[in-house]
Amino acid sequence: MAADSLVPAELPVRLAARAIDVAIVVAMNVGLGQLMGFGFDWLIAGALLVLAYFALLDALVGATLGKLALGLRVVGPEGERVTMKQALTREAFTVLGAIPFLGPILALAAWIAIVVTIRKSPLRQGRHDVLAGGTRVVRAAALRNP
Image 1 (cartoon, rainbow, N blue to C red):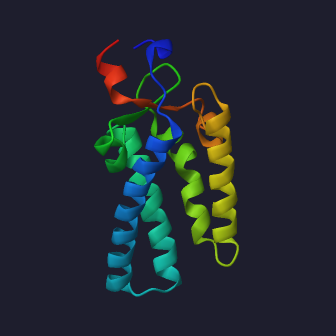
Image 2 (cartoon, rainbow, N blue to C red):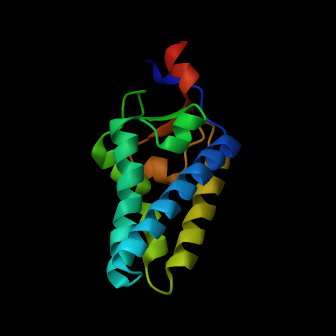
Image 3 (cartoon, one colour):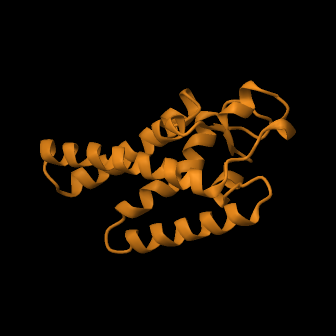
């Protein structure tokens, strides 16, 4: 698939997909906490669970459940499937919230930076996409209908 034929996903649908994913990972983390207790070990395990959810689905499926539900895919700079390294780099910011005390502030700052950079980019790439080597979130229909 030629990279220039991919249709970038706009910010509102990306945020909606992320909201679906957040609901899923919150439910998984609450379940995990009920199993193991809500201590420091849960905080670490929960952060790893969140990172694994986003990175594994992006790398193996091309989309998280939220992206799949809304017809989005994550692709590499040329339209190819993202590598595990790209997916981990792209989603590394998701663990910021687990840092004791400063985590929520750092996570909010990361979210603001990502939203601002997505809005400014003609390809709708956030800073996390650029850091991951130029990944992009595109409309899935663009992958099937060149």
